[in-house]
Length: 239
Image (cartoon, rainbow, N blue to C red; front, side, top):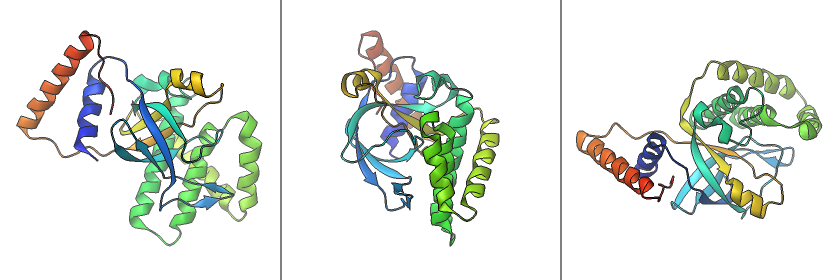
């Protein structure tokens, strides 16, 4: 993870204020993506044009489609209960449990990409589909269920088991410190989407090593400067 991203994320999280939207471009599938029932599975690739960073993103939304070179404005916030009401599905029943469960499933996908077992592609797909089950709305449940059934074999049973296990783990998680939620900016969506929501994504960023005392002092100075900017009416942007 880039140190700039982490330091500004920490500063934004520590300072009370409004996160400004970054301009995002959806680039499409990654080299680790799989195809399942006509759909690409996570992880995908995107570019944050505001910060200039390339991001690996994970899709938790089966309800809406997106394709490159789609671009939109989004805010990137830590996956934390204090931000829950600002997420696309944050006001749904058991929302935190579902978001934490999705992060757990996507973390398992990341692990598979490192360990690379012989059935990694199948397992990655099962984790993705289980994540889609967490947030699928009533109007898309039948479609998702039919595709799960059509896959055949033990796929449906294994996906259901992963879904239930992730929910159980999510119920005991208090925060997901290294996960962030990419949510469409409401003002941009109202102006450009005609009432059709934009997909929401998760991204994972590992923190860098603990900084030396001089770096900690620098972070404190950056936070102080950002605080001054906020008080002068120029809120800090999340990069």
